[in-house]
Image 1 (cartoon, rainbow, N blue to C red):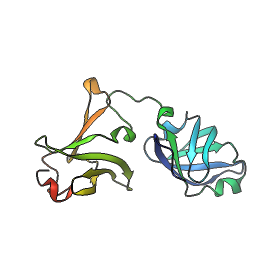
Image 2 (image 1 turned 30 degrees about the horizontal axis):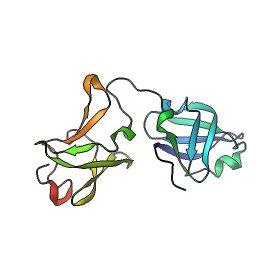
Image 3 (image 1 turned 90 degrees about the vertical axis):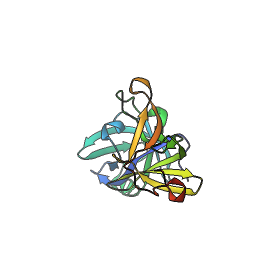
Image 4 (image 1 turned 45 degrees about the horizontal axis):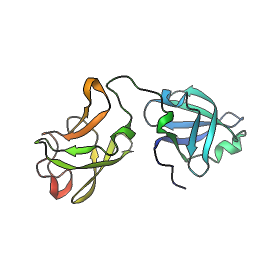
Length: 179
């Protein structure tokens, strides 16, 4: 069961929290983004209403409709959870959600179009852009000084990804020597 379109992966379940069905969540990004969600999409279960969300350093404990026992929470261990992009809270000016990077063009330092972002993946200590380009698909570290996210007027939504002059040669295969 694949997540619905227009959803963003927020993390995965770590295991039970308490005896009444609470589930600890390893959060990708800011845990505060989960605290006001009305529902989440759970891998293998579909959409579940959020009954309660509690801050739990460093993540969040979720109480979901239909999960009322420790055993029910244990069954979710390792499952990914997603939110509908439209349900995510608005961000401060100059910041963005990773789902907003999907579909953006990727340019080299000289302004040449190299490809397009198809996804953003969490790889532990480093987030990766999945970029399709004429030579195939590659992972690009979403890291300064190699990558710049160009925002719209006044720090609005992201408009493009630019590989800077500091980006290693061949970052996008043989077709990106300029990068």
